[in-house]
Image (cartoon, rainbow, N blue to C red; front, side, top):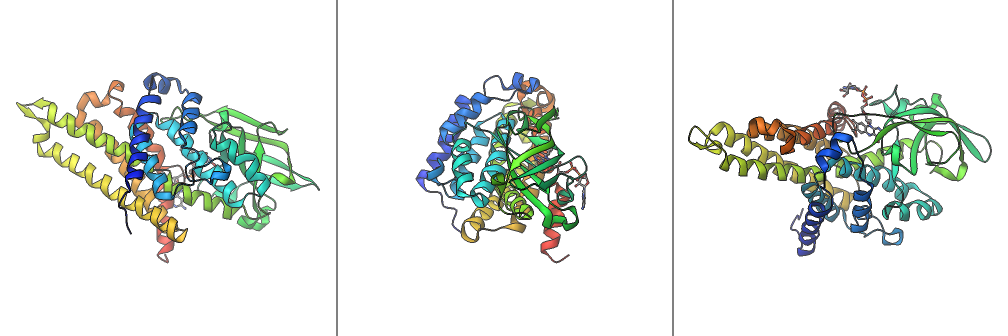
Length: 381
Ligand SMILES: Cc1cc2nc3c(=O)[nH]c(=O)nc-3n(C[C@H](O)[C@H](O)[C@H](O)COP(=O)(O)OP(=O)(O)OC[C@H]3O[C@@H](n4cnc5c(N)ncnc54)[C@H](O)[C@@H]3O)c2cc1C
């Protein structure tokens, strides 16, 4: 493994930091309070090239290798204080664009990828249902074949980007008796008859990433909008979620780095009992632990990137990365507040938002418990 960064990779990462700091942070405290999604920020990220990073040039992407992509996402996470926006972007890249790239027909790739890379369209991925979360393949949404189209019925919940999405990847079963072998993926345009975006779901954090239910009532979907063949939905979902687990939290490495720097600075400046609080071992050790988490998380992430590039798969390592990064992010976000005392708890210092945003990472893309199950499964348990 060689993680020696090229000058170009360094430049790209630094460019993303500067871009995010300049363009994406305006009025974030107010926007978070109001749960305002920034379409302007989305467009700017697309113009900067974020949404197209690892995608082929023929579809408007940059053809960046995976490590370069993760470095830019790390820079974005460091510079951008709107973690909801970064989350929404990640959701689209890994669970909408990637499945279309890997499993879409030429026609589907040409129709959807350029508009998703350019930011013109926004995508959402609908798997979770009120009755099926971790046990995702036990879904109830049905797809009945009717000659040249399918009729979809069911309800999806916790769907990120749904309120602003133009296109949805939705999973349904063509035959519940077939279990995961019946799960099939479809590409739905927002104006398909029978597709309704339901109530918006208010959240603890990532408030600027909009979320809603998606209701399908006799939704008519042309056969040409089936993604890959019938029964391939589980493979498509697993491929997308492995990419998500491998890449989504790269931005949070940037968040952890920023938090660490802020804590070091504060621990040097803030004096109590006549000396900087950083001179108290209770504080300096907390900061040392934040540093260890950051470096370990980064190494795990880069290893996953290396595996994805060289072997195109990293099932167990992606689960390890997702588990470790998300749990570390929550712990470090909490430590950052503790180190800042009462100021850390105030909205003004923007650390309480980091904590609220961080908690979701142990839930989406498979909970912490599910990642442990996956790792145990790879170990033959
Ligand atoms: C911010 C956010 C964004 C999301 N975005 C999307 C999206 O865009 N699209 C989408 O389809 N979904 C999305 N989700 C849903 C997410 O995928 C689910 O919340 C997640 O899979 C867990 O499902 P659940 O909430 O139904 O919890 P459940 O599966 O009901 O789990 C409840 C608890 O039981 C534990 N548990 C369940 N099964 C086991 C087991 N076998 N072993 C041990 N413990 C177990 C879980 O770990 C958890 O602690 C999002 C969720 C969040 C929080």
